[in-house]
Image (cartoon, rainbow, N blue to C red; front, side):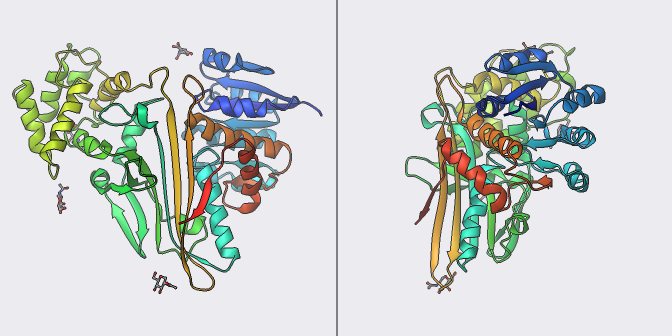
Length: 449
Ligand SMILES: *[C@@H]1O[C@H](CO)[C@@H](O)[C@H](O)[C@H]1NC(C)=O
Ligand SMILES: *[C@@H]1O[C@H](CO)[C@@H](O)[C@H](O)[C@H]1NC(C)=O
Ligand SMILES: *[C@@H]1O[C@H](CO)[C@@H](O)[C@H](O)[C@H]1NC(C)=O
Ligand SMILES: *[C@@H]1O[C@H](CO)[C@@H](O)[C@H](O)[C@H]1NC(C)=O
């Protein structure tokens, strides 16, 4: 078979499984482009038939030069830059794959992609990605059998495995904490029994509710941004309840609520955190953040406790212990980053990394309340539980990178042939991806409760 040239842009931790999948086929050659050439080299060195290059997508000539020499582009860079890749891909008539939600700037290329006979496939990682595949599959099965989806609830969590949840948040960071923390300040919207429920950002954490999957997991779920758009995207106009949410371990949301309430996620510049400001201890920083005249631990604890509402004494004590564990009452100097948010991120990232032998976990569950053609009520679940390999590939990387690699290969093979700016919302696009995922051992368990 003739040589295929694939350009992968970005070398983040989810890239590995995509590269590995694609390079299984001997005709595939891959160029790994990154702003930081040494990161591209590190990734390329792990695989045959790879070439690392410097690639900054904001430099048009550099991007065009790279795109023009390849058959397909995989873009794993931050969402806001994909449109630059789309623009170049239109110019040189190349197909593109991303794992990101289709933004308006990306959607704007739909007509141009169709006119040029190109496939720009998106939302093909885990969430979005695998979640769409199995939602659309169940919905299509139910509709084909003459049934209705009365309720669709879907929760997903990227978490430490239970034994690695050994810190006050029951959470760990495998990459930048900033995006994870900022997501805790989103507002959310979903359908519940036909009504639109809106959760303002300051109520997101307190809206968390227990969500039962298996007895040994104590999950809490809270809604994730705007779920109402999925009534149309998933073609379930009959559904009265539609909610997509995030799962965390018990204890996480109360802890975060306190962190928010004491202002540690504040994104404004603070004079005392500027690089040229004098050194400041965490205890002094905390006193400033909460407006406490005293920096003694007992005063700080008292002030924080007074801001905590609706939690038991025991839970309040647990959270104060957690703040101490992070080092907020200590005499250590803070690593000043301009804002409270970034300074706090730096402290969390230091404390909350995976240890070398620890593994992560992915849990995804869709729950469907169905009315069959004959009027029976049924509850179905689709559940994915994946663990990472200690010292090896994380579950997050496998479940994001593998579907992305599969989609790229299916486009190269002409099996995904639809044109335009696509996402996995139809059985025609999804079924071959599901089949290939199952061959990789990534399989959702679908069962009737
Ligand atoms: C590039 O990545 C390497 C690690 O792979 C890192 O040590 C280095 O600081 C990075 N360089 C820049 C300019 O970010
Ligand atoms: C964030 O900090 C700024 C500056 O100290 C302050 O004016 C603002 O009210 C804070 N924002 C919130 C949401 O507390
Ligand atoms: C505290 O709980 C009560 C009753 O559950 C609720 O009405 C109130 O909004 C809660 N207050 C806060 C600040 O969450
Ligand atoms: C199914 O559930 C609906 C309420 O959602 C109820 O009105 C109906 O009687 C149930 N059907 C059966 C067969 O139990």
